[in-house]
Length: 256
Image (cartoon, rainbow, N blue to C red; front, top):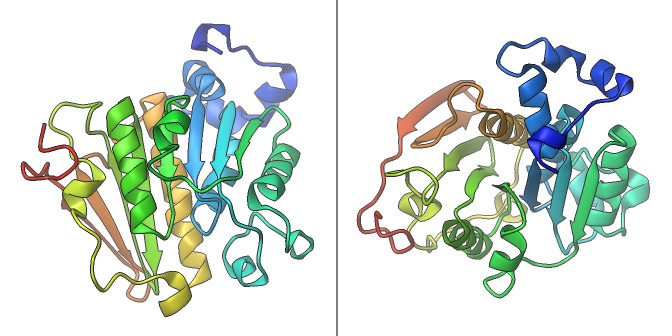
């Protein structure tokens, strides 16, 4: 659906009323959201809150990639799911919940593991990609696909009590960095949430901020975190933003 084709029913006008009155959004911005196709890689701790807020905001189509089933240990932070969903495929359970939240949403389920063999084929059909997975291999595959298909990437990560977030527009904006300008190789001491733990509410904070960055990118409101890295320390309640320059020696974008 093109932006020009997007129109709203009376029910949609009431549903999105608080956004429509924002001067940075208004009718044109809401039309852009309705026409948008957004892919979320990983329907877990970060993808779950991001999906909820994007669906609620009126994004027209959400693609969900995740090969996992809902586990009881997920429910501490993956608030998209209920106890009754344990054992169900995540994308199926997530799709049902999101459409219950907003029946105007189209959900495209991808119950697979994203890897270099399928990443470009899936990514090319979307306007924007959100990555909240807990695997550097998958993050690299997402980044490479976004580079190849000239798609912007919103990337978040959490562990223990710390979260980070950035928007990567290499291939979209001249001089912008890609994810591998930040992490060039898989760290030898890479940690996972299952090994070191994570505070559940932290996933909500970073996942919601991922949705916010996505909404700004799609509507053109404000400035995104492109070229910057936001770091949130939940234990000290401190947030800092550092400049994230393009790396001329980046193994993915080569600084191009």
